[in-house]
Figure (cartoon, helix red, strand yellow):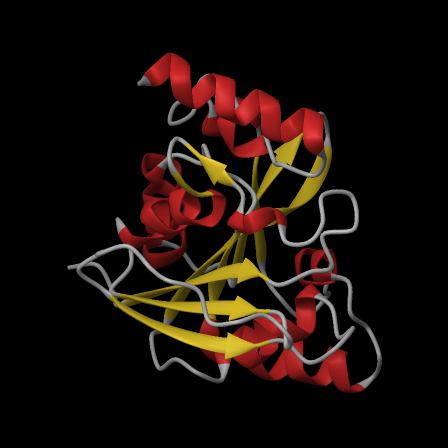
Length: 208
């Protein structure tokens, strides 16, 4: 039986290239972040949604899982958001996804969760063209929560450091593996600027 899994959706950030808040832009008739939220709801029993400190609490779709909102501390960065979210769950397994990745497949997230649950690793990440990508991320909460908090307290705020931390056992899966669940590499497509948003809307119309 799969261990309980919490999803962390990172939905804070400054949205400098697509103000005022790119995650509230509509794609396929709904807020952009809803799409990643639905993908997380598939393999997870609960979700922690991290939003920016000044943002109003967003409306949410019906998902069938519990969603709790945690506000980012100002300018703290994604690792601090993950550290805060890890302290707001008791689930042993955690999946972390960016709110601006509208096409991330639930099948890929399930596969990352299963690798974590069935192995000895503390972190599961994806490798693209030889480089480790910081997101999506699968974490063993008991091991990663104190390390994430310690790094943040030392002023280390880059999320990717968890995949490089010497005391954590990291399982990095390359293209041969992740293409079994995501042949087109949809997990890599994020929305950072108006051109990305136009592409995401066109893709949604094509599927609709």
